[in-house]
Length: 114
Length: 171
Image 1 (cartoon, chains in turn blue, cyan):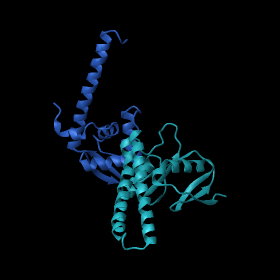
Image 2 (image 1 turned 135 degrees about the horizontal axis):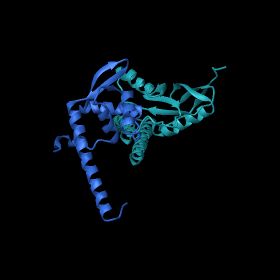
Image 3 (image 1 turned 120 degrees about the vertical axis):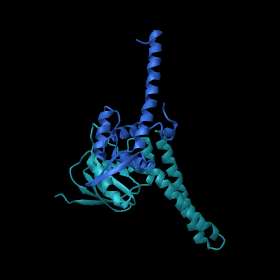
Image 4 (image 1 turned 180 degrees about the horizontal axis):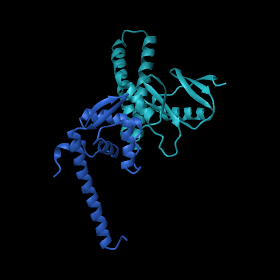
């Protein structure tokens, strides 16, 4: 099951979660912003101040690494550690979603919900 | 026609960032667009067409050799860098109805700027205390008074910054 060694990073904020998801492939900042917006179906927007701060923190934590600098744009990608943390987060989200679905199912069977 | 410049003196404390942003927005609505920061608290505006221009201020933790990368990220996402002063970077863009028009979009990074300012102000306050308190017995009353005033000012700054951080944490 979910290993405990990533607990210190969890839960990820919504913003961090989507940034890490986007960085499964090497991307530079602005593309990350666009990907996050697409993946979250517009529910999460990342401003440049937030993204710059997030990159610094994720680099420091070793969850992402810089691949190259190209025309004043730094390209980042997930490290193996970053991938493990994302996986652990997804495991948690699955539990949360399942717990929610179970409750909805129980409500439905007692007739409190359409 | 274009190059009519005016200068305005206006003081904002670090914790009044939203007030300063709102003021720059109002000036733009009257056709006065920030041209540069002459000195701290002295703003130069150029006069032109009134516009719905949003200003945002950042106090980033950015190393010298990374400033170009930092600015490029803002430029890519539609923010024009106007100027910087005392570690604050001024950005603007025309208000976009489809966006939040914010450079900080999550609570954690919103607070980070003020945490850095607080750490900096706290160090100054401690240094002032260390420099000033031992000399209390020896120095004359004017120096004592000035020292006390300076120390109180920095204690006040620290308290106001803590206030701003707590305010942002509640959002």
